[in-house]
Image (tube, rainbow, N blue to C red; front, side, top):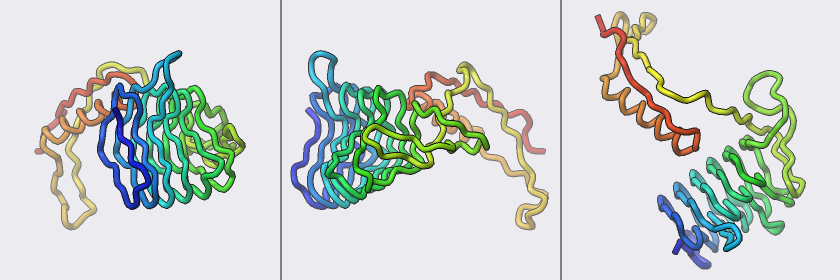
Length: 231
C-alpha cells in the first residue's frame, strides 16, 4: 500500500503515516500540498527500491515531512515553482532527487542526515539555502552554525549557506533543574517570581526525549527536578 494521487489540483495530503509498504506517497498535479507526513521503512536491498515522497506537481508546498530509512529515493521533486521547507530526510539511499525538468523550486531548511547520497540536482534554477547535510565537511570559522563554503551536490547545484551538522552529545540520564525567575525590570512583573507548574516541565522533557528518538540521536531520559520553590 501507500498513497497515490494522480493529476489533482489543490490536493492536500497531510498528517499520514506510511510504513513497511510497497510505495510511499506520490502526488501529481498543480497547487498541491504534502505536509506533516511520515514515511519509513520502504524497499529492500536486492528486491526492490522505493520512493518515500514523490512531489510531481507545480506551484505547491512540501513542508514538515519525515522520510526515514528508504531503500531508494527519500524525496523526489518532479515539478516546478514549489516550496520545499523543513523536511527531515534520513537513512535513505538517496536523500533528495530533483528532475532536470523541475525548475525554480525553493529548497530550504531541510535536514538531510545519514543518506548514502545526500541529493542530486542538475537544474541550477532551483535555489537551495540553509539546508543541513550530514556529509558537509566545510569549515565554520566564526562558529555561527553556517558553513563558510558552499555545499556542492551531485548534478552541480549548490547550497551557499549550508547549516553545520553537529553530532549529538553523549547520551544518558540528564537532570533538568528548574529555578524560579524574578523579573525586576518589568513594571508589570516587578518583584514577582514566575514559574510554571512541574507538569509543564515534565511534558517538556517528554517532548525533548521524543525529538531525540525521531531524529535517531538515540534514547534520552530527562528527569525534572525543582531545585528551589518560590519564596
